Length: 287
Image 1: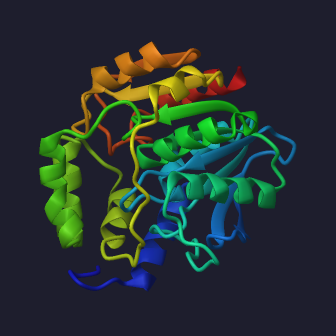
Image 2: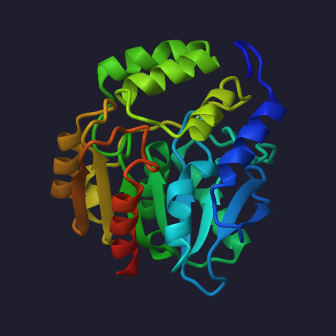
């Protein structure tokens, strides 16, 4: 296990591979060059299936976090799960341009889809990944067939002050112990997959770049988004006001289906309640 002030790349990779072992056996990988760095993508599902691009949350999340959903969605879709550039995972942040703005993230996804040979895809994300996905749908709606957002942060409501205060020590001085304590607090002591939790711990100290941050999308932009959207928010999320998120999405998005997932916290998604989440995603993505 890594300790405060250090990062163990071999330990991180071993933990990453252990979670990836939960994915379908026919999983493939590819590295896609972009101007912002080479992006590592885990792929599964039929080659002729409609494309589905998955973005993980921030912090220590990686594409491996989709293990509870990848198999079910790969029954009907060609699933592309991405490690964010500059974040924990196997992507390489070395590129000609730094990621500094939401527009940079949109340009990165344009380049990624081009590199994958995908003209348009269903797109989904969790937490920070949902923020990126929503911004991309606003940037390039013609390339987004359907959009799902799992407990998105920074999209429809701000963070709770108590959440930020709890997260601050982990962010300032990351360590496996602090990561575990924070996740156990946010998830209310609910059982967590030990392999996934260990990967989160091993990501502490990963040499990440500062994540792109920005304001919530403008109300007029959201009102003009006509892509079908599925919003699933966690009833037990300590990140934000769950019902404020759902209400604001209902008020602003013209084609949204929003629901609150009972007995689920923010950081436990998307691996908690896997059957319920998988069913809702499959129904939505089937159109």
